[in-house]
Image (cartoon, rainbow, N blue to C red; front, side, top):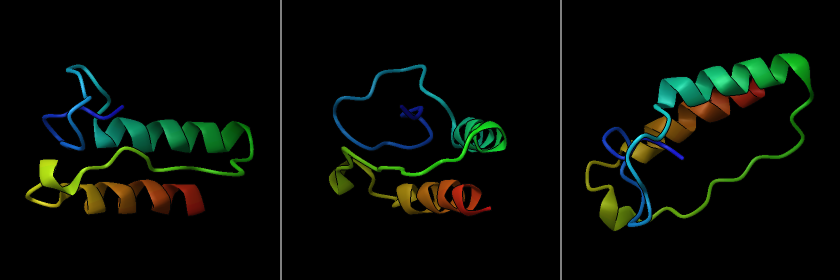
Length: 67
């Protein structure tokens, strides 16, 4: 789960989630040790993200998945 201060996504988020940079680093480390065969983006409510920060975050994570 993402840090809602950095990436507001829905009404169910709680404080203390991972930053986008931490998620990217996790994906990088995971990809170095095992093949990643699938990924999913879930529970996004655009009304909770008026600045549309999610697209930038998703783009960063997807770029790391494809690297």
